[in-house]
Amino acid sequence: MMFFVGNQWKLITLIHCDETLLGLRQTPLFKMGSKVSREDFEWVYTDQPHGDRRKAMLKKYPQIKKLFTSDPHFPYIVLAMVATQIIACYFVKDMSWPWIILLAYVFGGTINHSLTLAIHDISHNTAYGYKHSKWNRYFGMLANLPLGVPMSISFKKYHVDHHRYLGGDKLDTDLPTKFEGMFFRNSFLKIIWLFLNPLFYVLRPLAVNPKPMTVLEFHNAIIQILFDGWIFYMWGPKPIVYLLAGTLLSLGLHPVSGHFISEHYMYTKGFETYSYYGILNLITFNVGYHVEHHDFPAIPSAKLPLMRKIAPDFYDDLPSYTSWCKVLWNFVFDPAIGPYARVRREINLNGVVKEHKEKDDGIKKTTQLTSGNGHVGNGHANGDVVGSQTQNYLSNGH
Image 1 (cartoon, rainbow, N blue to C red):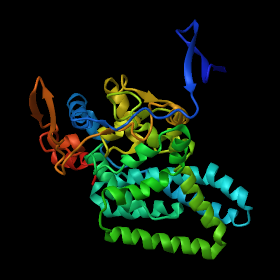
Image 2 (image 1 turned 90 degrees about the horizontal axis):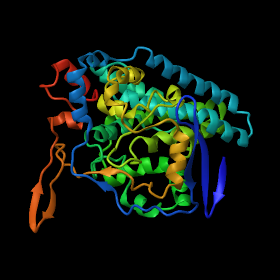
Image 3 (image 1 turned 90 degrees about the vertical axis):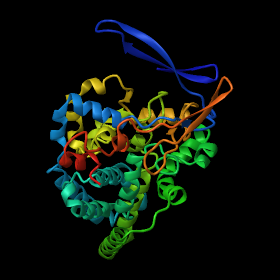
Image 4 (image 1 turned 135 degrees about the vertical axis):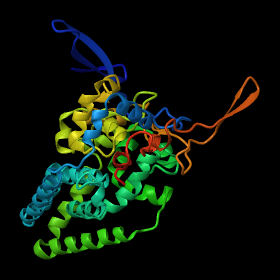
């Protein structure tokens, strides 16, 4: 039940203290209009944790290597989703505009968001394996079709850096900019920020770490334009609006988009990657298993729950979530959370965390912190961990 106490809503929840007793817990729910308390990112001078975790897990549980494979069922699931959206385009051609937008948010947007996560999986070469990289690239373009805008190849180009340089200033474009942290500082503005999230994901790489367009990006754009043109020719503008609206709405303020916040926004100090173990993993290719994914990016998403079962002692004590809706709610109304609530580090292109200068008793000390296990710390295994074939799998399949 919810009560208004003073100037703040309080939530009274019944919780199980054990198998037989019930207890009461009172937790602050929100204070409308509260301003974000953070003034900067959480700057750290250590390497990301996933390389050391990967090395320790492989040493203790070498059977994890058996999961370094492709997922034979994955392409058929993606093809079925693409076909569903094409069929939906036929049915929406005669619908009224309000129904089209509603259907785009509830149904089409959920499928399109899931397809962006399929593209995420494909970027790690889990559809056809690392030996068939080109197959994965063009299959990603096929999965891209219902989204309405080309993004598969560009996503991969920047997502590589997200794994190599997690939290890296000017390298990891998943990090909000300083402008976002300074401007979106209260509950209302954070809601606007969530709505505009797709726009920021498009513009942020261009502003922070621009890269030249590749031939495959050109192919991605041409194939997408031809598909959009075909849909328009067959059924008119309403299906195009349905597809585009679904993509934009589902990547903004939508229950499934809670993973954008839950993955790396720092709700618990000292932790920069979090997993979600709720039911929505069933329709999002297990993207909620995000610590597991960063530990082993080349393991197909369908096998991440199994990997966690193999090594439960590496995950059971980590903070995690069971509700993306609650994550979004807390992001909006908790003054401790905002675009600034991200771990950030300065890294050079070799994956070395840059120097940190501090004063201790009047003596200036300089410490250069590097990965404890070479490129493994940045999502790339080196030869002294496993054999050459496994090395390719561990390097994110790139």
